[in-house]
Length: 529
Image (cartoon, rainbow, N blue to C red; front, side, top):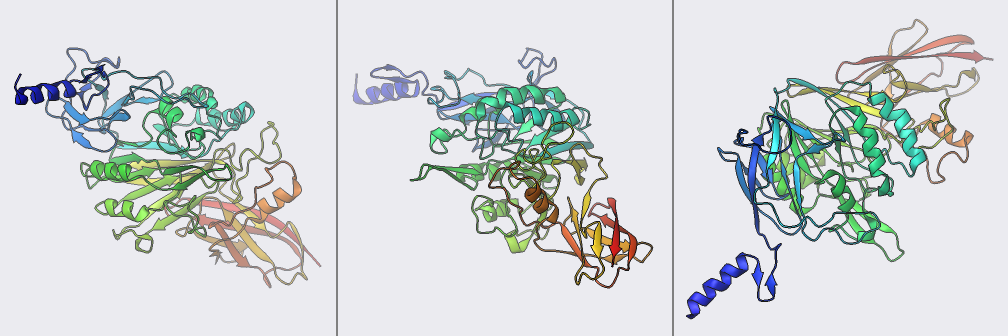
């Protein structure tokens, strides 16, 4: 055999997955398949089910569009997740737990040995990695329920979550639910029971990766998501609903253990994921609204220099988002509620700011506090807001958003935290402090005493909830020892000095948010000599 022929034959063997020591069955360099219409909804392509043209398929870096027959081809490594971006005129196939099935995991060697089980070896790629999508009318309007941090430490706290959150969501209409990370509190063995509970919502559930969903013994990012991956697939992906393009992001940068043996992380988006975001949005309609969902905020007021509560490379993300005028960023992590409008001062180059909504923690203050009449901790958040969830209603690319406290009427949107029900006239300085749980810089808050004219209140930049401070002091041992009140952006103030006389008074507070929702709170106080 001459030299050229030998080289050619050796190259053929290498590309075919053979070596001198024998076959290396998993040395596959590309995957191909078809995105098809799953007409009978069985998850498998049958001979009469056509391919779909122009659908995005990705390997978590590259993004390609299917051809006229629905075919695609992508490079793969030995740790690749392939997934499809659902167009708005289709819906996902759901498994028995109502988890969307839109991905294929290629990890021939499986996961390393970990405290919590990861992936079994997936073996060689099939000849065709196909994705079925179910034809559906594009929704002109749809509703999303979203919140973060269920974060049960054990089965008892998972029961609290069932009774306070899941039971309420089971009778609440929406098109899907997004849980914004920290699904667990380090004990990843609870995923199975959590998934079983969430399946009874009878709607798709999208789960975001959080810093308490890490395989900590992996000691780094490479295998830090193995248990999450086994249950939910990729930690970043996209889909479309109506006129909205959703990107679920992973902004947890796990740094492993420090010298003291403590696990470390920070907020950041990996270079590979940033490339995927760019490639994905290159194929997105510029007229669509972009909704990003992650765990850690892009920016946390008052804590700008703390890397565990901010996304360090948000400016690079904003550069990619520049062509899109309408952007929402959803996150959890903080166990508080707040809204931010991140414009050019925060690195946003587009003239329209990103509306950042930091959603309520389902666990509130980590399932802490005195127990209510149902035996569940009140779980008031550190900003004084009750735990609950957020509802976003989309109509075309437009949206309205509101907050629903768990177990309370939807009209319960504020607490008049000061003054106390009984005060003395001789008090030199009497403040009216109102905690508007879902308030923002675009909210207007006014008050009146008895039948006086309305008076505008001032929003404090950052202030502590007197109610939560008192709750901590009066219920020692019911909260974790490290929990303290945090400064929040949704407390309004007015000075009542000189506005009160001896007697009984009715204080009425009225708030209107950016969407025109109007809520009222009333407190009757007595003023004594």
